Length: 173
Image (cartoon, rainbow, N blue to C red; front, top):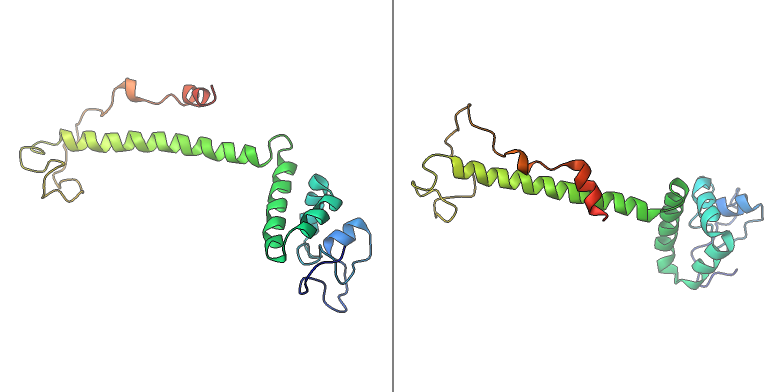
């Protein structure tokens, strides 16, 4: 359990053991591999990591890594362990799937909004005849200053509305 290279162990005369040694009910040695990454004031971090990966496996993983990669490895293990505690079946994959689904829905909403902007630009009177078309050198990318009348018809018919329920179902089939 000796750690190669210095600088990562406990300080001389530290009063309390690290969270790992406290949970495992053992004496925390000065060269404890867990001490730099699982401080005594954050016991929940090691508790979840221990529950998911096991102390022996975490010890082996940390021993096999160079010193400069251990902090990132511990951070990843803590994140995965917390995700597994929240969602024992999917863990991080469940969170990633949920975020990907949100991205897909937002991209669809963005596409609809962009289509609506194009449609509004095309409906404005004199848009193309006054040289304000999309390829015009005077078009700065912002809409013309002419305001549409307040009794404009709806932009899209019912065929353009995204049905959220069928959209969600079609993503996974």
